[in-house]
Image (cartoon, rainbow, N blue to C red; front, side, top):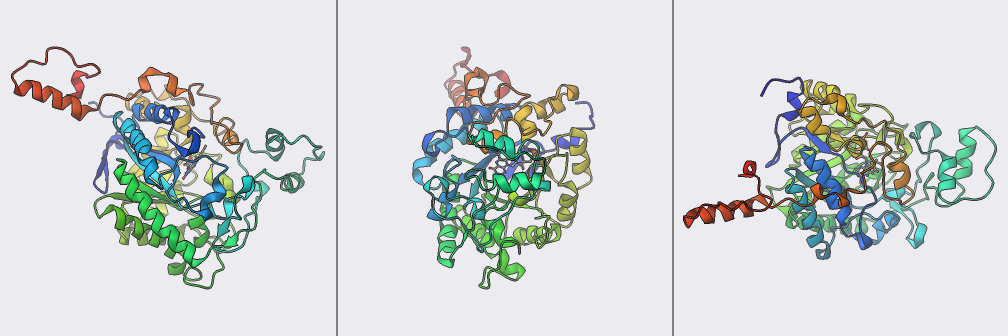
Length: 459
Ligand SMILES: Cc1cc2nc3c(=O)[nH]c(=O)nc-3n(C[C@H](O)[C@H](O)[C@H](O)COP(=O)(O)O)c2cc1C
């Protein structure tokens, strides 16, 4: 094949024992496509199939409940998939098989709970966090498309709205209306006993992920959720073994990772996603994250997946601009010996720059793959101009997600409808087809009749 400046994107990479055919991962995104009672839906199978068929090397599923614990119940507003108990293994194995049949590897992201970013709405219990400190919303940290006024109207608020352009005034008004999710409730301090229960349960969750056929499991420790709340002085004022020193603040994370390792064995891929910083006063920064990444490597973690920010710094978590986390990623990657995935680089030239300069080993793309499932294939074939580029408007995706609606995209009318498109039905499972051909050959029969769905290039 002729040389292309995009070749670095197509160099395979190994995460633990998992060989990934290129450097693009699909970032975890809950699209509100999950079926009733947290079961995988046909829409999810087809949606992921489209991105795998589009050439993405590694799919990382959205955060599934890795535990089913009263403290995690405060996220019931969002219908995440579950993999905390045997009942969900069959459905989740369909998902893994489906994605595999399109040639991508798949890791499942697992969460232990939303922490102080959960809510007692819909009858759930009071949220728990490292310490009883609520999160705040800062007007300057909002993202495109999430304006207090439109959110209030979308949530069905019919009352009068203040006549003002002052964003602080609007926010303080919006925060008084239940259901806006603008400011947090005061959480309860999680007990040591509850922490220990979560640590055990997430280990069992990882075991089920392995059984379901996923290639690896990624622990969700980012975006201000429960594990993240322990890292940050903004949210952690504990005086016990989970607060104070660096080792204490990362203890919960390491305990979860060790528990997962115990249940999946030494050869299974485990990763962790954390924010590169809080990027706010008294929060942690990328130097903390760098130390944490190194510590995870020492613990036998197989890769790090970065993100940035939290609900308090939404414009880092869901950047309004290209490659916002890449400089922090460069700092964290220096001296790290396990692969590092940096999020939110959508421009292929910036991806090549990041990979060739050692700023990251892989790139995860989220909204860019909602808009353009064929991103990888188009880059591979040099069809750069044909890439439909996400504008980071958030209109169809996150703005609808927070209202509990299925995500759409103003640039891609098929997203959310993939289940109606035949090409995203599961492909034949190759090893089985191969076995049929081999058996025919062994008994001296020419496999002259083409086997339905088997293409010559599959052999
Ligand atoms: C609708 C939506 C849902 C998301 N859900 C998750 C999630 O479940 N877990 C997670 O770690 N990040 C989640 N994210 C963040 C993405 O993984 C990603 O980091 C972010 O969108 C920035 O990358 P992008 O600019 O390529 O979209 C979500 C983002 C969106 C838009």
